Length: 160
Image 1 (cartoon, one colour):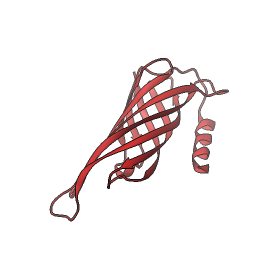
Image 2 (cartoon, rainbow, N blue to C red):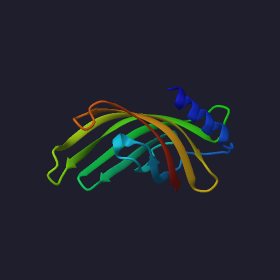
Image 3 (cartoon, rainbow, N blue to C red):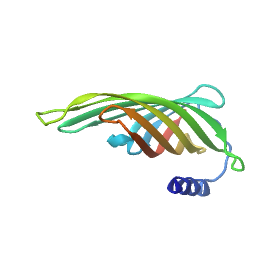
């Protein structure tokens, strides 16, 4: 937990303050562990002045292994007091995924469901670029993802 607060503090101290609104749309990549799936394609759509929907798609295809994961969270966005232009957000949601092991390797395949939370901080530059650092705990329900996963990620998105 101390590492998360340290990362947030570093990000805040590096950012130059400027005015910012929630973008209508943002599309980019979220770089994190993501239960072994790595980076995901991330899309955000504003729903109101202070809420939005974030959807993510991650997949991994290896010689003997395939996996796919879809995540959706509803997020509430707030101004960070004292740092105009920097927002923090909190959200809740979930997702589903599937995995398969192929080519005669011992293993199985299946699907899984999970609940997800999200808390993070973001900054939108003068150019149509947004960066964010977030923490997403996920509680999974299946053999592939049957525990609490803690994912910290850096996101870079084009805003429009």
